[in-house]
Length: 180
Image (tube, rainbow, N blue to C red; front, top):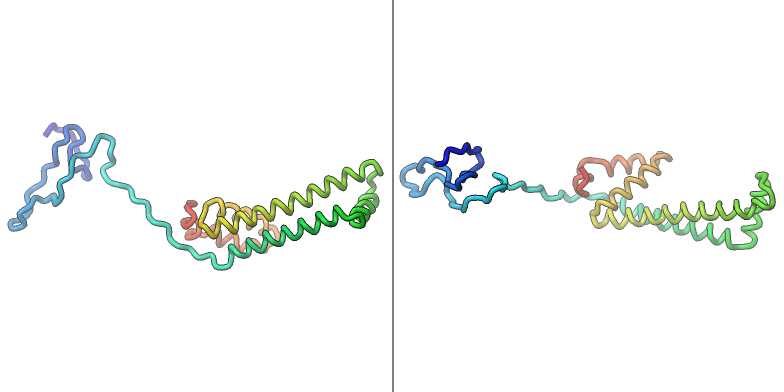
């Protein structure tokens, strides 16, 4: 009515709010070609609603449980390493190994402490990442998928993680976790 140009999806004029003219329906139907009457959209409303497709269920089988087993493995490794560092016999053996590498007597305790922090730190971080991957994969969380991909990337350096990494990066799994 006002002369504004309408797009094909508009049912009402974006300028004046008048309904779009449509020819009458064929005889006998008793209603106009537009079956439902809605109020005109407010300015800024898109002509059509965008609908996000629902997430497709994905089955990873036993893969989350392998991450749980990895978490247990690294916790056991951290416990063994801590026991080795805390026992006098283990410390004496580590100190003799450090002395054989050519460190002075003054440097040996610092090297032992650095080695202990490194070994325990790696074990605890690996156990934590495996636990996060297990929990996140089971609950379909994006952070769990990301932790699983990071772990699989590290394991792929030993060739073991390549098939796991390939499965995690496949299109259905990425879509299920909302990563596109």
